[in-house]
Structures are given as C-alpha cells and as structure tokens.
Length: 423
Ligand SMILES: NC(=O)C1=CN([C@@H]2O[C@H](COP(=O)(O)OP(=O)(O)OC[C@H]3O[C@@H](n4cnc5c(N)ncnc54)[C@H](OP(=O)(O)O)[C@@H]3O)[C@@H](O)[C@H]2O)C=CC1
Ligand SMILES: O=C(O)CCC(=O)C(=O)O
Image (cartoon, rainbow, N blue to C red; front, side, top):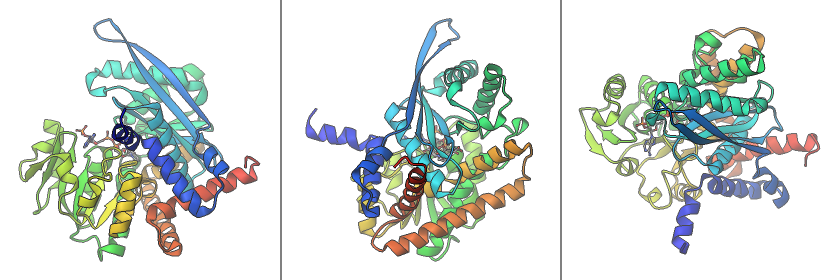
C-alpha cells in the first residue's frame, strides 16, 4: 500500500477517527497517556458467527459483533446496526461514542454497540427474523437490563427489538423486557422513542441556531439521510419554522430553495423507496448535496461523509451531527478554523438514548409514561445538556463544541473509574 492509500484507509476508519478525537481532548484535560490508552480500548468485544437457512435451503453465514466499551457508570447501552460495511472497528468506535454520549446526558449507563455485516435489503422478512433471533441466541449471556441493553440503530427498528426480546425471554426464561429498548408499544415500548432522536436533533439545532443564526425561524436546512433520524428531524424542524430546502438518501438528493414539503417527501419515500423521486427540485449526488448552499447542514446518514477534502467547500453556517461520526477529525479542524459551529453527535443525537432510558426505567417499574410527558422530558434533558456544553465551550475559550462535550463526558467517566479504583 502506498502512503496515500494508507492515509485513505485510516481516514475512513471510524475507530482511528474516534481515538484521534479522544487523545485531542485528553491532552486538553491533562490526562496521562496511560489513562487515554485504557479509554481507547473496549472492555470486551464479542464476535459471533450467525448461520441462517435461506429460502433456497442454502446456509448463509454472517458475522456480527457486540462491543462493550466502558461500564464505569452503569450497564452498557447502545444500538445494533445491520449494514454491509459493518466491521469490528466500527462497532468498537460506536461503543466508545456511546460511553461519552451516555455520560454527557448523565444517564446511568456505560457504552455499548452492536452490528451485523449484512445487507438487509437482500434478505426476506423471514430471513431477517432468523438473523435477529440467532444474533440474540449467540449473545444472550452478555445481555440483560443490568448488563447490556441494545436498541435500534441503522436498519433496525421496533420489529427487530420485538424478535430480540421474544428470543431472549424464550432462551433465558426471564421476562426481562428492559433488556432491550426501542420496542413496539405492545411489548413495553415508549411511544416517543421512535421519534426521540429526531426530536433531540431538531431541539439542539434550534438552540444552536439561536446562538449563531439569530433563530431557527426561516433557517434553510439540508438533511442528508431520510431514515429514522433524518425524517423525524425534518418533521420537527419544519414544525419549528425552519425551511427544509434539501433531503437525500442513498440514491442522492433533491434541493428546492422554495422549500421541501416533509409530508409529501415521506409519501414519496414510502411509495417509491427514495426521496430522490421527489418531483419538485434539483437532483444532486450526495457529494454535491453536502456542499450546497444552506444555513444548517444536518448529516443524518452515515459516518465520515465530511472530511478534509470537502470540508473547505461546505457552505453551511452551522452543522448539526444527526449521524454518529459524520465529520472526521480533520474536518473538525477545518470547521473550527472557518468559524463554523458543529453540534457534535454525542450531544445532537442523544435524544434517542434519552428516550431509551425513559423506556428502560419505566419497564423496570412496570409502567409507561404518557407520550406528552415523555416528549417534554426528552426535550428538557436535551436543553439542559446543550446549555452545559455551550457553557463549557465558552469557558474553554479557543475550542469547539465537540471538545467541550467530550471533555465533560470523559471527565465523568474518568472520575467514576477513579472512585471505583480502576485508575
Ligand atoms: N436510530 C436512532 O435512534 C439513532 C441513530 N443514530 C445515528 O443516525 C444515523 C442514521 O441512523 P437511522 O436514521 O437510525 O438509520 P436508518 O437506517 O433509519 O436511515 C439511514 C438513512 O441514511 C441513508 N443512507 C445510507 N447510506 C447513505 C449514503 N452513503 N449516503 C447518503 N445517505 C445514506 C439511508 O438511505 P436509504 O433510505 O436509501 O436506505 C437512510 O435514509 C446513524 O449514524 C446512526 O448511528 C444516532 C442516534 C440514535
Ligand atoms: O437508544 C439507545 O440505546 C442507543 C441509540 C444509539 O445507538 C445511538 O445513540 O447511537
């Protein structure tokens, strides 16, 4: 491999990116290298082989992982993704980000994340069910409401959680519904969980817009990704008075400066499979989309989409990370130099795990909170976290919002490790 190929591989590795961010913040906090070295490693990674019988009778084999990064503050907590590019490194990086996110939001959790390397669009519903049940079959000893609590992420949803919980109860004989969150309402799911990540992204976008744009009203917003996070973020921002001027999914994007009608976009997505078929607007590739004119850019699809090559061309005045890890460490430096505020993932998209926390706590008590009350609680937790991070950002002086958020989170984890005698 030549040096630019090595650089390319490293810059597309989410784990490398997250470790860089950890060491940057660790230095500012004055943490010793040995402490950073231990924080960079997960406590445990379980790799599983999952075999299912395809509809043609053939055995199909998939690899899956669950990474349990840190449990200083409580049981591991984080989603499970199904994606053809999932790797162990990616899952470990995402579990580390969950450690920071949960600590930042003052939730009683450590960080975990899971994934299966699979293209779910190539499986039948029956094959997906087998895959999900076998994943739990392989991992059940490491899961539980006081051990590790999975939830939905990319390409997983309440139905996936229903298969998980059913299989878990069948195997263990324990009716531990709180072992999974993001479940269907019939199984103790919180009605607000389905939209809680998007609600949180929209809430932090509103608060950041008040600081840097003079308000959210009329702000022109581009949202990359129109799945769970992107679509609900669009809906809530439209309700807040922002103007959604562009949306995209894997096929590409559509931009219309007169405004995209979110309800119509949802219908187009449902009926045709892609927002690229939205009839009114200019069609663009995802690369063009990210550098198109707007006030707020919300990458809400996958990681590493804004890197050192396109970061200088981004026209947004504010970036809100709906996805986990959409900006590389190099892109952070570019945005800081250009004075563009980035609301970091561990803050911006934490509404999801706050919703999960309410569901978990309710399940433990055998009750479920009224939807409106849960919604208010999620918004108020997000507002409080944003205020804390913004205050720390001002206090730190010449640093960005990610550094402020990570510094607060890492300090909490380190302090918990110290009093537990681990450091
Ligand atoms: N779900 C949750 O509660 C939380 C999710 N997140 C993070 O948010 C991000 C999105 O997750 P979620 O919405 O749940 O996932 P979904 O699977 O529901 O949606 C993902 C969206 O991203 C699009 N997409 C995938 N690949 C690309 C690409 N290469 N370019 C452009 N768009 C692409 C998909 O397109 P298509 O529709 O065509 O497939 C889809 O619209 C992830 O980073 C996830 O980790 C963070 C916190 C909580
Ligand atoms: O709801 C959860 O437990 C975690 C959601 C998640 O995976 C994330 O915040 O990235």
